[in-house]
Length: 215
Image (cartoon, rainbow, N blue to C red):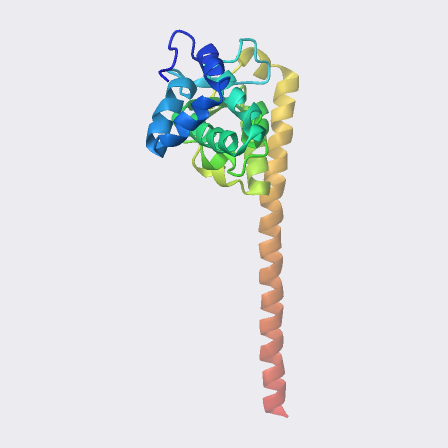
């Protein structure tokens, strides 16, 4: 049962082809299985996910897909797929570009229907942006949706001066900033209006009290 470290992906395929190996895995403890899964599913370097993925998927990414593809074959396969998925997300370091974040959180490896959300499993993740415009857009969405993970994810900026320095880029930045300012201004005006209404009610109560006393 020792993984083929020369090529974990093909070693895993060979292992999963034999039904008896699932029974061997079932006899192991949960921690023993986690260690075994880690040989196939935890990379030695961060996994970077971006929209224009030029390079081939890493062997650990393909390995998780293999587990998820076999999840519907039986109860053991489903159990091991969920355990493998947990090891994958907890053990790896992810670098996720903002344009692909939503897809990553839904499940990018055939695990869209898994019961535990990705955001509850990932331990180490860095978000990357190509410009400050994207940061403003992300913050605007975070304000609107109150995303829970936005408070704990570190932010890294890859500043593209050639793109960001152009006039269209600057105009786009200003539009996003104005949107954020509009939201802030809306809340300020709302609070001022509520304070004004409370003042009118208070004055009205005072005047009503005086009128009653005079009568």
